[in-house]
Length: 84
Length: 221
Image (cartoon, rainbow over all chains, first blue to last red; front, side, top):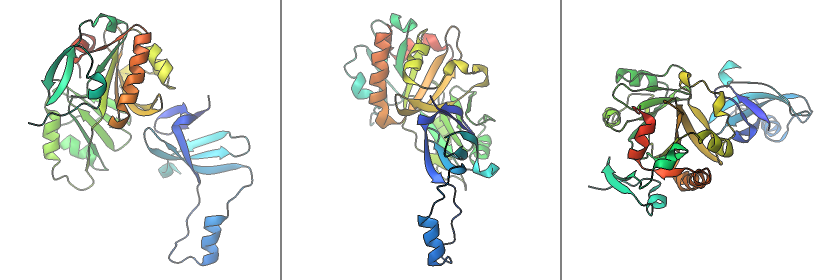
C-alpha cells in the first residue's frame, strides 16, 4: 500500500487523497494579456522531475503541497501552504 | 412535538428490543440478548445532541463559553458536565453532549448571533459506537488506518475512511478494551451500519441498545 504523509493527519493510505495538479502562480486575469493567460491555461511543464502539487486529504479536507518526482512517483516531502 | 429520526432508524426498525424517547428521538435502548457484545457490540448513539463550529475565532469563542479547548489539531477533551469536544483540524470543533449533559443547547443558543469569523456547522451525523474484544479485528477489515499504533492517552481524533465512507473516529480507553466512537455523514449511515453489522455478526458480536452499551463505557464522556 502506498502511503502519503498529510501534514495534519500523518501517514495515510494514498486512497484517502486526491490531487488538483501542479502549483502554478495565476496571472491577474484583469491585467494579463491573452498570450500570458493562454500560457497559464494550456501549457504545462511535462518534463519529469520533482514537481510541487496541490493534494487534499479528503476525510479531513486538508489541502497541502506535495513535492513529488513525476518519473519515480516518489513523494519527497509534504507541507502546508503557509509553511511554503 | 415533532419526533426526530435517527439516520439509522430504518435499518433498526425491525430489530427486537426496548425503545425509549430520548432527546426527542425514538432510541433502541435494550435488546433481548446483549451478551455477545462482550465479543463485539455495535450501538447507535445518534440521539446524543451535537454542535459544530468553525472559523478563525471559533476557539476563542468556545473558550469564552467556558468550553475547554484541545490544544492540538485532531485531539479531543472531555467536557466538565459530560460529553466531549473534538478539534477537527485547526479551526473546526465538534461538541457532543453525554447522555445527561446540556452543553449543546446552551452553545446553540449562544451562537444564534455569532461574532465575526465564528460559523456554526449543522451536525446531523450518524453516531455509532463499537465495543468488545474483537473491535480491532473489525477495524482491520474495514479501515486502512492502524488503530493499534495510537497512544490513547494523547486523546487522538482520527479522520479517515471506513469501507469507503469518510468517518471521524475517537478511540476511548476503557477498563478492558477501548471503545470506538464513529461519526459519519447521515446519508452514508445505512450503508456503513449494514456493513459493520454484517461483520459484527460474522465475528460473533451483536447490535445492542444504548443502555446495553453503558457497562462498556464506564462514565461516558
